Length: 111
Image (tube, rainbow, N blue to C red; front, side, top):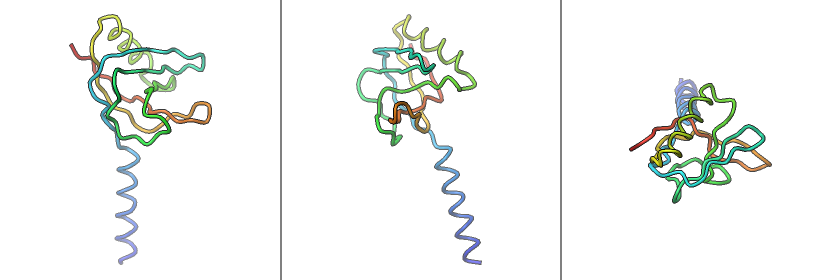
């Protein structure tokens, strides 16, 4: 019985960790880099406040395999053009050239 309870508790903890997201703060975009690999690198003013444990805290990366890549990329372009602040969340890391970078999963445009 103890083994079952311990197993269930462990599974619940790991499933929560796998689905965790981390807020990166509300900041202006300093640089939007479009890489030939298909990824978008996002450099924000200051240091992002997320808690992801990637090799680098910045740049944030928008993965071209994201279901809403086009919509999120359009939102980033609109934020750059209007000089608006953005907020949002990252979850997990993307590997590029043997280094990992935070993966953007949500973008909010601020006034």
